[in-house]
Length: 498
Ligand SMILES: Cc1cc2nc3c(=O)[nH]c(=O)nc-3n(C[C@H](O)[C@H](O)[C@H](O)COP(=O)(O)OP(=O)(O)OC[C@H]3O[C@@H](n4cnc5c(N)ncnc54)[C@H](O)[C@@H]3O)c2cc1C
Image (cartoon, rainbow, N blue to C red; front, side, top):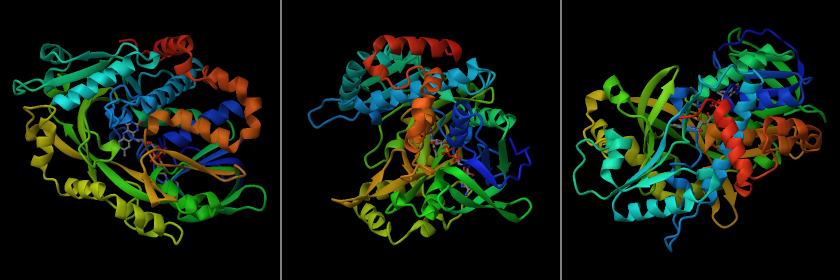
């Protein structure tokens, strides 16, 4: 979807930088809460949803910790901690409620074009991993958010649930698998386009593609002055905004640094790119219907957990395996090789060097991944599909993720794998850094932006927020009845019954 509007207003209430799922979600929320505010969206590429939010640039997993083993770490005493998993699932329920509101209020026609029910499975082999998965299942299946999860060590049952991973598998391997039918595949690109189509159709909202924000400085006491380049016309203009959201994905850090806000000091970024093997054989694609997550290898960052993924993209099923990590100094897939070097500042060089010093396992992992041959990639795939053949798979490059590096009193600097909203004290600018759990949690993350930047408006907005997200302000994990009610309702509205 490219720009169709021609507004040239030089002062607006809100500027959203970037045409990804985060800006789309925030814009759509603000439209419900404050329909009279003017909004301008600036996207440097020719269309929205062309970077990480594009369906082919991410794995499309509706992250709700049903299958991702990195959200349930095992302690030295063998216990499995489900705190993070409960939090991630709780966040996904907020996204489901938000999307249901969009469907019920005809903001988007239906969820079918972006949301598909796909079983989520965890698959492990070896005694220790099987013992871990059993404990994980015992801890999670008691919880209302994970209700209905199934566990098996029976190879015949695994074969029935996921035939592709059992074909030609050597006998005698100790295996275990969990299955949840609550899982989803999400086409975040399609969702982003739907939200921007809606936004651009509302009064006082303009979407400008091929417009790059190159700088932003404080505009006296009342917001920000942005320098915006029209890349099509090769012209530049200034736009004033009372509130700016920097939803530039990997490009957010550079813009945040330009604001000069104290909250941005000491923050650096470390880009990790992703690659997938994409199946080219329609017969194989048809034989698999699940997202199957395994265990990460030692030193691998949490988002590199291997998985075999059924996707539904623009009405067609696809099958991906990966991700394989790559390294590039670009912060965006269509960014510049100078992104990383230019992000190094006097205030973040210390934390960045400390991270380089303390993360040898990650460095070693990345070097091994970058040097990996196609036959090594196929070998990793054969852990999941034992009879996989190179001729049926092609390598595709996915999006860039910029991990956050922050100052740390004890270590000098730490590398974070989560997502964080950085906002100025006066709430006039906010940026989203990091990319995990990512697009799945766009709605709760954008609620967090509202809470940080518009705290004085929240009492006035609360009734509307409860219409949009019925569980707003409550933890579903603590209210099993509300949890069931919200889950059943969203399943029905989003058409997710299996
Ligand atoms: C390999 C991989 C796998 C992933 N898998 C999953 C998954 O399974 N599930 C999940 O939930 N999440 C996943 N994610 C994360 C998810 O894709 C991201 O969290 C999400 O798409 C980020 O959305 P965004 O809007 O912040 O960024 P983006 O979608 O990257 O959008 C940012 C936009 O800003 C634009 N921009 C940047 N700078 C400027 C500027 N100066 N001026 C104007 N425009 C600018 C860019 O061109 C881009 O269009 C994955 C990510 C990767 C890379």
